[in-house]
Amino acid sequence: MILARDKHIVLWLSSVATLIVIMIVVGGLTRLTESGLSMVDWKIIGGLLPPLSNASWIELFENYKLYPEFKIKNSNMDLNEFKYIFWWEYGHRVLGRLIGIVFLVPFVYFVFKKYFSKKELVVFFLLFFLGLSQGLIGWWMVKSGLVENPYVDHLRLAIHLFMAQSILVIISFIILKKLYPSAYKFTSNRRNLKYQFLILLLVTIVTIWYGAFMAGLDAGKSFNSWPLMGGQVIPENLFLDNFYENILHNSVFIHFTHRMLAYLLFFYFIYLFILSKKLINSYFEKFHINLILVLVIIQIALGILTVIYNVPILFGSLHQLNGTLLLVAIATFVFSHFQKN
Image (cartoon, rainbow, N blue to C red; front, side, top):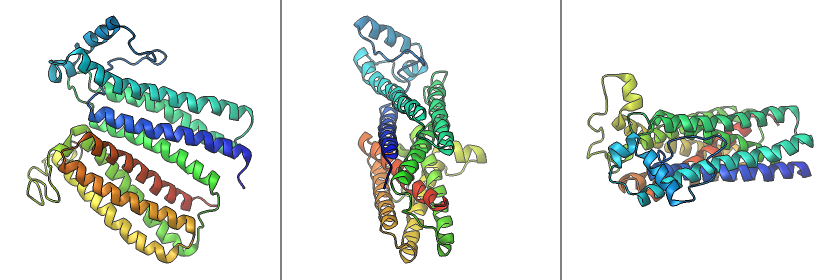
């Protein structure tokens, strides 16, 4: 039976996790609506209140006009159009502060009440540090689009997204272990299986990184067909002479690789799904495996729809959200089998 204090911790962490999921969705929508560079400064303490007068809006808009995004991309933008992109970025930043408050206030209370073991305290201090780092990484990412090129650096975007997802994974794992401390049983005949699922997790992480590269470079809009790319199995300009440029900056290579990784993830998981049927007897573990299967199928379908419809906001957002949930599902399954009960 779960202890009363653990119920409080689970409720607290579930609230934080829910806000992080919303934050990731809003962050994706901010990217899809090209709103991320609408706020050109970063105030750690201030910045909570939005513009409250027309004069304040005009001042913000005039400040925005000094930066490359307006000069190069949005020179015909009017004040109402600016307000639209501002609200997305403003909401994203306010959510970040809200998550910090929802995490920190109960955490201080729980520490005072001695709810945590020493090991748990280390983990929660790590989470707090990661949360602070995420704010800095977010500004570091935005700043990349405020200098000369009015586009956020896709490498920084990938780091920002993956940091948020990593925090969510850690919190989700803690919740899972609090609610179901003995749901996952390690047995010697499943040693190979857990390492094979670890490989699946690594493939998922790399796939997500390349998905973030896709978003940052708008690579999803380059080939709006499936399964071929531009009518070819191997698209033109797939390889550049410079290896580094190819794997990190060539939008054609990134798009192609993201697709190939998605296929690898799908077929490798189907293999593991079939294999696990012979080795897993626990109802809870079977449910977890089935959940991953559903998320994998949905992710493939959303990826195809996102590409063929030229990255509409709805499909693009759902693809990112489902990819995040898939990462959480696979990571928590893997971590549960590597932790001794």
